[in-house]
View 1 (tube, rainbow, N blue to C red):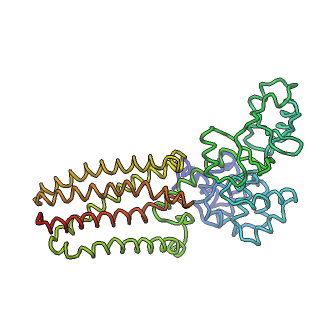
View 2: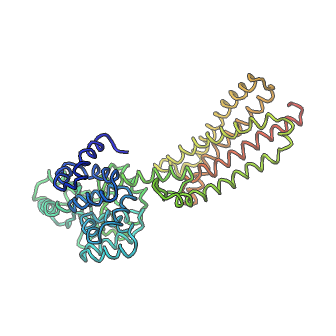
View 3: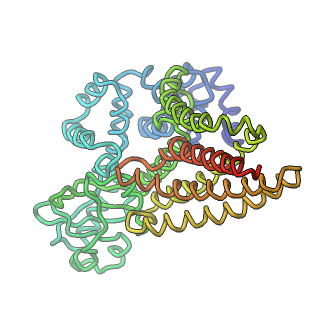
Length: 452
């Protein structure tokens, strides 16, 4: 959906676009941010989009290419020529270029790599060898580094010499003669230092850094914890290979958040809103089938107490309330625990404390909600003992919800699985089975004792 500003731009461009007035469109594009141009692309036909794209200079086209969504980018790749694609990729920073090339079919990717100059092609192939969700997969090779024996003046001169092709310069990386990272010199300290001073006098010799195989989520945590703008990336021998900038980390954080949302909703993280129906069906069906299995497990518990329900039909009306409240309570617990795991506040080191706390909260909520539910049942004309039954069952199931909601994500993390998977599948089944079993089991005891 376009913003008001983007709608205004679309209106301004509509007439010259219909008349194919290239000059007027180029003048309009001069004042637009690539993000706004990308939004216009999303609102026009494929033919118009291609016409507009070919009016952009290569440097602007490369930025727009990165701003459009994945499906629009696929459409562009399909209609532009190989030479146009090479021009666009050649203008990108290495990390962005590697991301784009990784999305291409193998033949097209090879064609683009072969068309670039040898040095850039080799760099991109190295980046493509790292898993996408690691520090190596997120880093760019454009950076400014100087030898540890350099002076401040020499470092500043290196910044000036490379400023045209290295963006977002906030640090100069200091290396030894073997290319190993010695430290990081912040740009503000360089500017304030005397030119004749050695670079090491303004260098942080214990910088926060990432090894190439560090998971992107851990990288994001480091940026957040130490309020970084740039982080060096090294190999296991401490050799400087690249850097990660804060704009890349923002994308990682957004990606991780939505990945957790998808998994908590039992969705495949690869699914996109504009996917073809059949692809969406293939991604969702397995999760729903697993959910069906867990639902039958819960139904089998109800089947065990079929005679109890026949004796007191009102149980069939009340048992979904007990199970439903348990599911909602478990979702609350899961959300808190998964957020804690994502931020690093929760881990195996404090697992017992978390489980105890969430179980205690579940028990307290159970006592409260159970008492209110029992009172409501009594006010609506039910037997006093039926209210007691609801109170006991609700208390037990919210206790189970707290225990399961805290334990299952921690177990999944211990097994190196995504804790977000625990939401609508495992824990919901946990509370459904627990709710039905406690409610109907207690009902059977009450009936046998003659209390109902």
